[in-house]
Image (tube, rainbow over all chains, first blue to last red; front, side, top):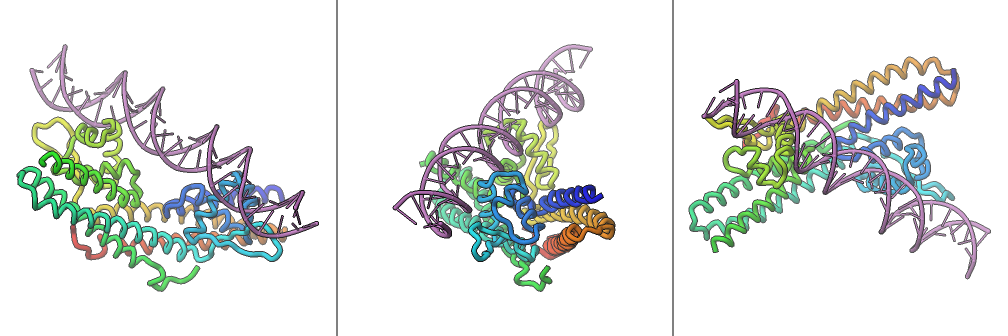
Length: 175
Length: 175
DNA sequence: AATTACGTACAGTTAAAACTGTACAGAGTT
DNA sequence: AACTCTGTACAGTTTTAACTGTACGTAATT
């Protein structure tokens, strides 16, 4: 009976991990990173690299690089314990806030970067476009130019939309 | 001079494709699909599979599967030309609307699916949890249960947030 | 009806990503 | 200072995804 229950719990743990990972993958995490995060999230108390390694059946190296990525995204934090040599990591609480803000940050900076690049190319093209005499090339350049304008606008709308999505602007309850 | 300009235009075309693809990849397109879409988007008038194949230097098979994916996401449409045997495809206008709504749809359905799955597991666990007598397992099950509650809430917030992002609800200008 | 042209399924290949084991640098202990 | 322990860089391997070529079904043309 006890053994059976143990299997049940373990089993559920696995299923939940699998299912929740799918959601986190939509935030841009790799399958491996997602599973790692969920493992940390479900574990009571922080974990060492070795524990994660054992829990997931992957090498310690993978854990090291994986946890670093999660750390960079602000999804996991390092935690200290007096007189303990190993590094300890735990998942941040406030799932919604952390994931959303990490996600939005990624979008914002990417959208802005790409917008700027395209804008600068747009300027370059504008300069050139006046020197054209060939009718057909002129027309082609013009078509491209108009598309680039659309793209810039597109990026602006993205930035705007995701700004609105930011939980640090709105009043979302903290989970 | 003409040749030089031609190179310039071609070059810019390539750069723009590369840069804009990066943005579209953030919407979940694979690099290949993103490049294909941008190629269609920059091309004046619809293209055949063979044209795409030549433009991207990839096989016609790849174009076929690629364009099908874009079609399924509503990003590309098939277009008819009287007395022309080959299939013709063109990128949809209204970048923002199309990408956003495709994107949101994906999020919504995934979030709802995962939420439901977790909720049903939650119920299953709740049933079991009462039958526990072992103190430690009881505590573990409880911890897991609480996490699952958080996850469900998390998915609800996601659904809510993305609902707000939907351009068909708001009043975004059509690009 | 025979022939040609087109798109796609499928098996096999190539390219990319994820993962591992070893080896080493740096901190902590003795 | 020698020794031990821990995390990570790196090269090599395995796994996964992307791509290709052939072969075939279907529709248009003759």
